[in-house]
Image 1 (tube, rainbow, N blue to C red):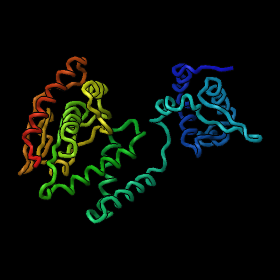
Image 2 (image 1 turned 90 degrees about the horizontal axis):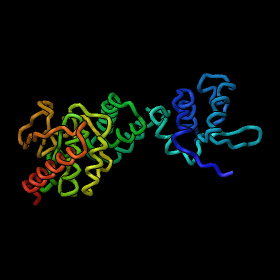
Image 3 (image 1 turned 180 degrees about the vertical axis):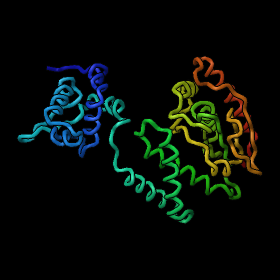
Image 4 (image 1 turned 135 degrees about the vertical axis):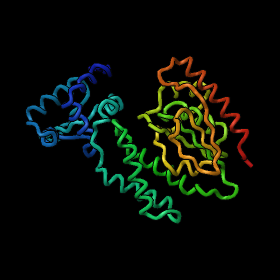
Length: 297
């Protein structure tokens, strides 16, 4: 019998914390499949209790069983895999944090060989991880974001003393790094390409870029890419030729030789979409004017 699965109905089962944790363990298991006995051991519950929850998850199409001799392996239904990962991702056990950070350090030490020593790379990786972790309730992408954030900081550190002919660097700073600064950065990247190095930061960054920002950028054909809110750090300011602040007060340090602009812009957070579009258009006008003032020779 061919049974269509309604995503919303079975996922309601995952409101139960034990079932959510159980499914998270299945996702994290080798091969993304697990036995009831091992699940019971990991959860500290009896096998009958875990079997009860597994039965309910199978009946609602979240888990599927694969008999192997006298045992049955359970995995997440391929039809619901993406939805289940979204539902339990914040609680999904990740690989050992020290092992993951060690891998990030290895990769970036290779990338920046000849520029920074391994201890310097490790310090920036661990500091970047801590800065992001203290604000993150959803840690699904903490490892990859740590790698990206640390790489951006090390690149900025290396660029603090510009080589002749290097591309100008622009830093956009707002409070949450989830609205105005992301709009400006995305538009400048689209207009300038590799001719300008663009970075963003927030004096008190949010967890994610606002969905309304993604929407209004998409309306004008501008991708956000892999951008996410990041805290303001010293080296990105020192690397910048132009620092554009947007409502973040005195949070941004001032260094001689940089050009500082303060754009008075309304915060798009909580605004209706039509107002967000108006803010986007105002930012685009300012970005185009900024671009004409940069030395791109």
